[in-house]
Amino acid sequence: MADTYVVGFTGQSTIDKDPNAVLDYTFDWAAWLTPIEDTIASVAWVVPAAAGSIEVESSTSTTTTATAIVSGGVLGQKERLTCRITTADGRVDDRSVFLKIKER
Image (cartoon, rainbow, N blue to C red):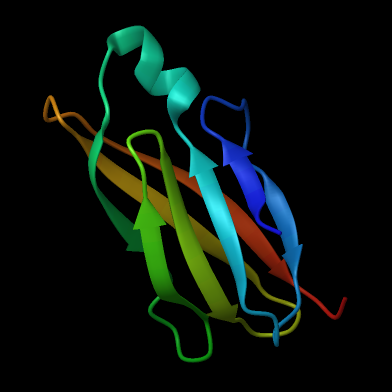
């Protein structure tokens, strides 16, 4: 089951993640894209470069969602997972969530 982050949420979400878990995290951009009548054309994932940090194993996207399958993380750390989209009309935007790495 994926954790879903709805773009447009005020503030930044923090989600607990076990360091051994390999899970999917979905960013739902529909509420942001629908009023401007635009869609996702491409997605890039930005993660920390530090050794032992989280890694994006793979990703998929639709016209309104972007999903990353994420592994790793250092116990006790808070890692930022950023979803950067480029839309069909050329808009570029980022949204981030924090993954708190802890035993679950």
